[in-house]
Image (cartoon, rainbow, N blue to C red):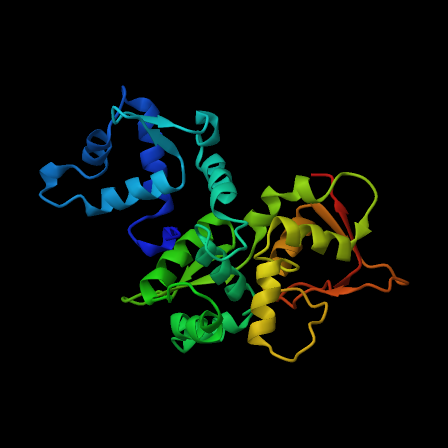
Amino acid sequence: MAYEILDKDTVTPHRLYALVRLVPRLDAPKRKDIMDLLQPSELGLNQDTASDVYLAAKHCNLFNEGTDGVMTLTVPTNQFDTIEAFRNLLCKLLLGIKEEGYNNYNLNLFTAWYCIQDNKVFSQFETGFDYAAAFNSQLLPNLNIPKFEQRKINAWREWAAFLGFGWLLRSGSRNSRSILVPDAYVRLEAVLDELLVRGPAVKFGEFIERLGQRCPELDGGSLFEYCWKVCNPGERRSNTLSLMLSNALYQLHAEKKIVLQRSGDALDNWQLFPAAGQSMGQVSHISRGEN
């Protein structure tokens, strides 16, 4: 059965980071060594959380466990010497999964489904929208994968923020809830060098094709397109970009990491999702910026 990092809400990015950082600092560590440091038995608690994190790291192939039980990392330490490097490493390990039956397919599919919600997420948040029920009813009847439940939504929200699909906004009440504001800035900024080279601008449609190949959960990607078609049967998809991608493009353009252009005689124009304080509407070409 495929592994899903969302199955255990005790597995958080920073707990996983703590485990990986521990391994090279210990002399030939074994499972018990790691478990006792992550969740000391002296505290009088069971070690279920530490065990969940340990198994997650193992499923992500972050370490090997020898016949003698000694743990050795499978990745160079410079790939997790900072939290940013660790994020990039996990993006490579967890994202880009676009076929049912593979590890973390649910993580990628739900991200694509959330992406197509656009600004509806704000009204959904206010009304206490049941994301799990909606996702299950719209997508899962056609798929042979386990149903989502609220704890997986909570886990996804934290992982999505860490992996770069938005940022968390809390309600501020005593029983505070949080919403992931759609914004793929971190996700997109990390792969810009793969999508664009410095030089002449390219047609924005070509950029979307490249983006879809690299990030199937975003606009142009197979998961994004699948979710959109299932949730909007019979409707023709326009060239309007998602809020999640548009927010990222607005910021990257403002920081001069990319340049968005609108050519007056272009036939292939793409509409950025309207956002407060943003005057840019359509875009036909894109290039790398000076930063």
